[in-house]
Length: 483
Ligand code: 5AD
Ligand code: SF4
Image (cartoon, rainbow, N blue to C red):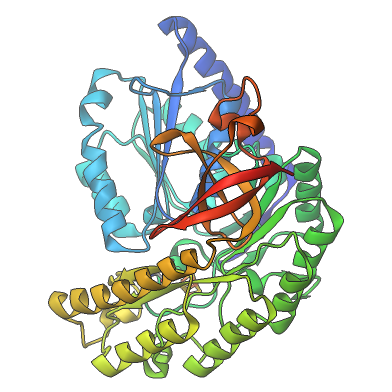
């Protein structure tokens, strides 16, 4: 695969297609006598969410309105292929659109995302889901207007799977941000690590870093627009390169020092690459969140080697302990895969040992899922579903206890919380996050309530909250003041 930089002039075709689409949807709206609506469903990781924000931005620029209740005129399913169950979900969901697609021939059903880079999935759509209008993969995201216009003109299913890895200039795309206080900022795309279980290097292509100046321009625009939180995104942010050298520490420092964001977050870090410097920068900047996501995957050196994760249990523990030492009120989260091919009980116990020693504040735990085309999918030593389930539930039990304890340790303290909005299920309760990424549900005493505000109007404001009670996955509290 080659990496192609998409320049301003390359986007002319995209701009032309966008104008034509705008005219097309305007005339469709006139003939139907109503707004033309869309919905975007996103599966998977934050990079997919970021892609969806870009797609939504484009749809809005064509004059479409977000669908609130009825069946939309245009549906985008942005898929994930990291585990098999995410894939199953897509094929289940596609069936649900069959009748709606038959009912109105102007309706458009579009499938994109990582699954659409896997030939078997595209073939299955061609064969079993003829009512899908357009299929494209993440590398082709910036070409969406061109592809959509082609499809509308041609009237038959269009599948367009990229051969090159693109690096598109995001600043040319309108972005529809999901949250009014938080902006997702991709700094790099793709992955070169080829962990043997993982499909991402095949679906998202080789690593390519965005231009430093462009990222800085984005950050300036976001800061000027009043965003409180930014999330620097990449499959492996520590590999970010600028001016031909590793540049993530400098990027993080500049993001913290040159703008006035309240929270700077980043995801994900590879344990082989995260440097002491990054931890030092986190410790010395109050506006960098005190939370590090450091995927362990396994605690066994033997399994880590088979996973092609070039670090050891000891190195991981050293990094984690350094983080705990430098940022005593911080939190560590992780990803763990249970049941990698050939994993023995001893290997699994090594994983539990790391989990207990580090005391992760939270963890995403997964059962190994073979991904066609990856090295591990051909490995021997697959575990039986019973052993897999048994280990998974033992890990979960320990981790749930650790997460609860991490929440308990907050009780009695008062910290800054960035308000995310109304808590699900109770309109009198607000929800937000601490700098350590703990989820807080809290109430506002009557005397602090702002007249005329509903719960969601507080979204994006910062306040001090006193923590009163721990729950398994959150902490309860009472607001003390706005800041
Ligand atoms: N099976 C199970 N979990 C996986 N992950 C990635 N690939 C697989 C797989 N084949 C998990 C890893 C990764 C997270 C995003 O998904 O833990 O960090
Ligand atoms: Fe997948 Fe490994 Fe790359 Fe993460 S670092 S995206 S787990 S190959």
